[in-house]
Structures are given as structure tokens and as C-alpha cells.
Image (cartoon, rainbow, N blue to C red; front, side, top):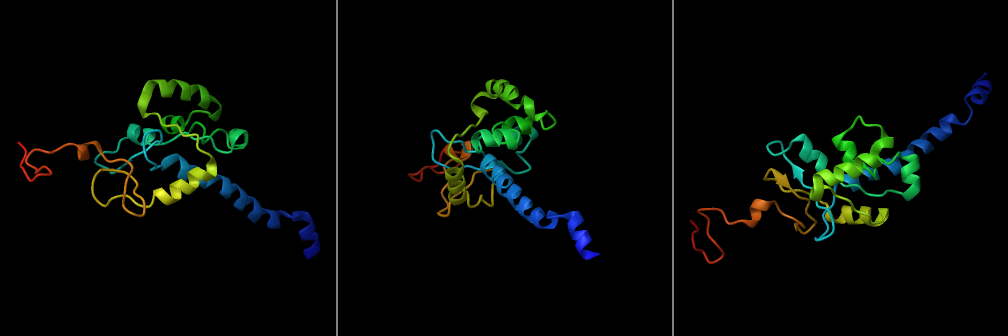
Length: 174
């Protein structure tokens, strides 16, 4: 009886864990590569992370990065999910086969806020792993920091002297 059951189900119990791990190995790097980056300027994207006070749907969608993942295999087997990831966040119900055309229009519309990076897959994963260790505990617009606590980019207000603060010489500003 047991051998008949085994013949009926075949190698399914053996192949299921293998297939699950294989799919996971391709899908898990996608969010890591599409939502994180902290490499030095000028040509790399630096998507910010927003806390509730600053977050809105458009900012969250624009804080993603399009990256070619696995070349033609990623386009075919993963339905362009990484190649056209930004447009996926703006229009999550759009069919995958419209991603390329929609990305062309969206990138024109949002201009400098559109982020694209064509770094090779494993190089990007390695850089993200090493450069994106944590975000600050305070603030509403956050950027990843590396192990030394250095960020490649800071929020815009960090570059301006605020009224009533002291400059580098200890002189109070008006």
C-alpha cells in the first residue's frame, strides 16, 4: 500500500523543497536590490526611507530602484519584476507586460526622481550588504549607513544652517 502511494505521488515530496529553495534564491535578492543602496555619489541611487510623518504613497514608490536582474532570464522567468520595479510600485495592478512602456513614460514624468542602476547582480548584493547596515534612530527622512555610521547622502535640511544655531566658529546665526 505504501509503495503504491509513493508511486502515485512520485518525486514530488523530494522536489518540493528543492524548487522552493531555488525560487527563494531568485526572489529574495530582488527587494534587497530594489529598495536599498548607499554607494557614494554621483551616479548611484540613494533611496531614502521615510517615517510616518514624511511618508506618502508617491514618495514610497519613488524610493525604489530599477535594476536589470539576471539579464534576459530575469525578464523572461521573473516577468520583468526587477527591470521595471519602480513602475510596479506606482501601478501595482498593471499587467507585467506593460512595464517597459509604462517605465518609459514614468521616467520622463518623474525626471530626476527615477532611479536606475545597471551594476551586476552579485556586485550590487555585496555592496548593499556591506553599505546598508542600519538607519538612524531619529528623524523622518532616513538613509542607510555603513558599519562605520557613514551615510552617502543626508536629508536636505542637514546641509542648511538653521536659525538660532551656532556655526562652526561658535557664532549664533540669525
